[in-house]
Each structure stands twice: as structure tokens, then as C-alpha cells.
Amino acid sequence: MKTIQVVQGDITTIAADAVVNAANTTLMGGGGVDGAIHRAAGPALYAACEKFGGCPTGEARITSGFNLPAKYIIHTPGPIWHGGDHDEEQLLANSYRNSLALADEYGCRTVAFPSISTGVYSFPLDRAAQIAIRAMRAFLRSASHVEEVTMVCFDPTTARAYQRALNNSRNVNLN
Ligand code: ADP
View 1 (cartoon, rainbow, N blue to C red):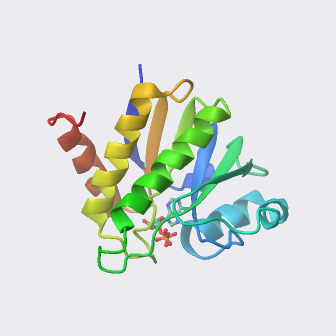
View 2 (cartoon, rainbow, N blue to C red):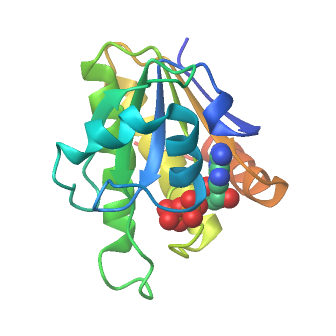
């Protein structure tokens, strides 16, 4: 059974096969969830990320989980919201899709995501939630290894938005 679930919590404590980091294009750490993941994983993560020489928006890179309970960390820079006519929706979908594809390639069964782009990057929450759930559902249909995707939301407002998007997606045919 393939499942998508929404929980409220701190993604650095989640023992999934892979946790996703809402990174920036330098991959050299930042604030928000990125800072929390780097602090919890330890300095070896910084050294591993340095080797990539950055990552374009919407793409993804994978490292070990280092001191996190997760086996892998998948780093994806989500789009910065610039009003909606700069391919933000497509780029956000790419972040989810490419992160899931990497997780699948590495044989991960369980994957945990934070709410990519809805913090400092200011992507409207409900739209982001809809895009995320849609990308997850589409990916799970053809996944080889990934079976369980968890949205780990830091605050109750964010958790409610993703739960709403998940509930709504069950009532429509997404193809
Ligand atoms: P972005 O730059 O992609 O907007 P942010 O880190 O600013 O990324 O915010 C993305 C989301 O991650 C926000 O909802 C923020 O509250 C949340 N967040 C921050 N710290 C954590 C954490 N430790 N675990 C899960 N989510 C977190």
C-alpha cells in the first residue's frame, strides 16, 4: 500500500530512509529547515554539499544523513516566489518530483518532506500544498521503491494546509 501522510513535527528527528532539505542553490546551508538540518547532521554534511558546487532550482542532490536518524538527505532548492509568473509552480513540482526520483533510485521506501518554499521563499501555502500532494500522488503511481511519503510540517497552520490538500486530492481525479 502506497501512502501519503501529514504530520506536525521537526524533520531532523524523522527516521525515514530519506529526508528532504529545502535548500538554496548554493547548497551551503541557510536558515529555516536548511539550518536545522545542517546543525543536526553535523559539519560533515557541509563538506559533502560543497562537492556539488551548487544545484539549480527544482533539481535535487543526495548525501548521506550523517548524524540524522535518516539514511539519506536529499537537497532541493525550491523556487523563490516572485508573483507566480516566473515558472514557480512548475519549479516547485520539479523539486518534489526530482527528490522522489532520487529517493526511488537509491531504493528508499520512506521519504519525508518539509514544506518547500513556503518559509523565507514566500510561496503561497495552499498553492504549494496542492502542488506537493499532486506531485507525490503522480510519482507514487510509478514508483519502484518509495511507498510512504510524509509531509513533516513545523507549525499547525502548515500541517492543516497540507492535510486539506491531501483530503481534497482524494475527491478529484488527478490522472
Ligand atoms: P524556504 O526557503 O524553502 O521557504 P524555509 O526553511 O524558510 O524554506 O521554510 C520551509 C518550511 O520549513 C516552513 O514551513 C518552516 O516553518 C519549516 N521548517 C523550519 N524548520 C523546520 C524543521 N526543523 N522541520 C520541519 N520543517 C521546518
